[in-house]
Amino acid sequence: MTPAAPRIPPLVEPGPPLSRAELDRYSRHVLLPDVGAVGQRRLRAARVAVIGAGGLGSPILTYLTAAGVGTIGVVDFDVVEESNLQRQTVHGVEDVGRAKVESAVAAVRRIDPTVDIRAIPVRLTADNALSVLSGYDLVLDGTDNFATRYLVNDVCVLLGIPCVWGSVFRFEGQVSVFWAARGPQYRDLFPTPPPPGSVPSCGEGGVLGVVCAVVGSLMATEAVKLICGVGEPLLGRVLTYDALRAGFRTLTVRPDPAAVPVTGLVDYDQWCGSPAAGPEAVEAAELSAAELDILRSGSEVITVVDVREPSEHHLGLIPGSLGIPLARVTDEDSLAVLRAAADSGRIVVYCASGVRSARAVVALTDRGVPAAGLTGGFTAWTRSGGAVVGPDAVATRA
Image (cartoon, rainbow, N blue to C red; front, side, top):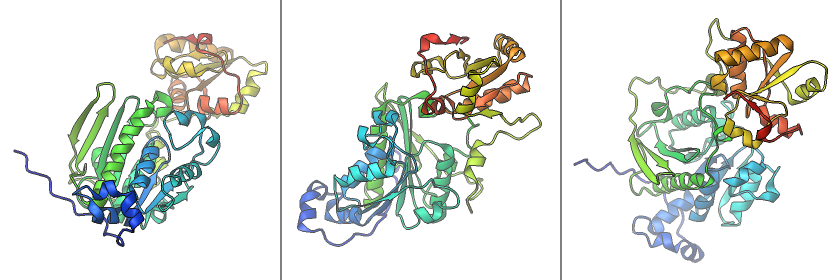
């Protein structure tokens, strides 16, 4: 029989006694034997930082506010886009173009105006993260990139506070609690970041919106458990969710005794995003959307290559695109076509955001086929007002 996990003491000391109005509002919590009035007072005294006001941040902010968490800092530097509305439920149509922190704070203040919701419209970096997150009892990381995940983990290690982490992709999600003072940290699960571009983002691979609701709600639940000291938090465990199979699995994570301790912060963008150094490394040439538009209107022959997957073509394509998925761009047949294109003109490669196209440019240049990538990819092209055609207009070599 597996012994019971040791109980984690409450993370936060109780605040002042609840008022009559608070007792009425939070009565369903007060009725819970493991929470009660004292647990609700802990929630009211808690200070929680939520990184990201997007797909995961939406349910986190909604339920932590409804739970009566006293202070919530919302960290995000992005603005609301129309494509966010499929899953980021704290934003509405009227919020498109608005700063996410402003939209999110306005939305959750309608739930409980007595909660201190703080908008922090900054991009976390190694220079500001310690000052931004100091003073909080715990952090919930709802970001979607590896650089910020490692940064948030390392800051939490240095501050000695727990981090509730979650991620989503397509129909799946993961949740865990990292707390170096009591168990594993994020680096024990992922010691090093994956190669740049090897893991597609939700903007490239898609995500079922309701998966964000499941994972974000689980993250909020872990936060409440930690604050109140109830149940067994996901410390040393990763909970995985598969929406298509309606199934959960639990994986064990242990601290790595040989891991290099976190003693300071580094340049996480460089660490996670730089290509491997070596004699074969080549800097990818790039063009802006405006530069590509000018080139296409001139007399030079321009071959535009789309290295996204065919499933992404439904979002639209740059007119005249030749579709060659990244995995096939260095195939013998593809290289023959691209060499001929390079002999007669210029090749410009694009993907969704510019990550995969940069890899394609390096791979082609290594093989003697000069090419340039489109900075910001198809997203930048559409934002600049570039013409777009449907998937039937692409010539595909899949």
